[in-house]
Amino acid sequence: MSEIRTVAETDDWAVIEKPHGLPSAPLEEGEAETALSIFIASCPEADSVRGKKPVERGLLHRLDTGTRGLILIAKTQSSYDSLERAQQDGLIRKGYLAFCDAGESSRPPQVPYTIISAFRPFGPGRREVRPVFPGQRGFDEGDRLYRTDVTEITLRDGVATIVCELVRGYRHQVRSHLAHLGYPIQGDPLYNDRDRERSESGEDIGPLQLHAIALSFPDPRTKDPVSVSLPRPSKTSR
Image 1 (tube, rainbow, N blue to C red):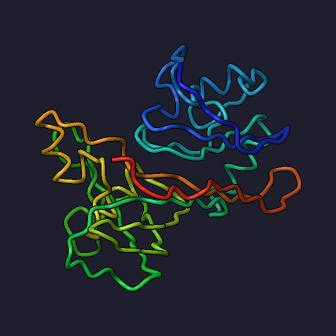
Image 2 (cartoon, rainbow, N blue to C red; image 1 turned 90 degrees about the vertical axis):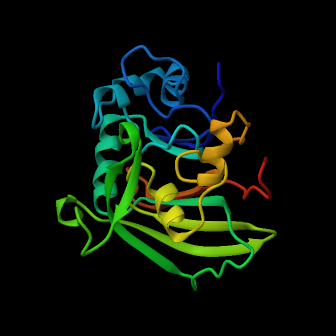
């Protein structure tokens, strides 16, 4: 059984840390090896919460299976309803740190730097997504724009350490946006061409080097701002 860690908690909500390789939530009832299922097993009162999907209980947002980091879970229905309203109002912010490949001659954009796009499915089985910008085919078909705010880029020895924030997330948003910017995340066989080739040849590329390190949101009971963060990882584990 995989392990999760509760980083902060009240009677109304919990912020847990999910490891690399563990799904955030079950796809169907009874699936045990997910971060949400493990949390519910230790906090059975949260099992009665119903969110966007009944199987997701009080989960406010997902992380990709390969991503390590913070997830917010409501423990009561009233807390979920309040936090979901806050999310729709753009009051829940998520912070990420990624270790990315960068060429020796890479010249990063001046930060802060913002990427705003719609997305479209791409590739075999529609497993990937690609950002779509104004004037490009399919842009008008998108139901919403998604924004990634890059706040820090540090280059060293061909590795770009990138810190970014977002409010409303889309599947693979950070991975796709950073790859579009020219900094594919290490350990990503979908958006990093070098790691795709290495993975297809049977080489171990290590875990996805994407870490959800910060969350901020209004407390559903008091409305006071809450900020939860993890220490920054100091290096990749490749």
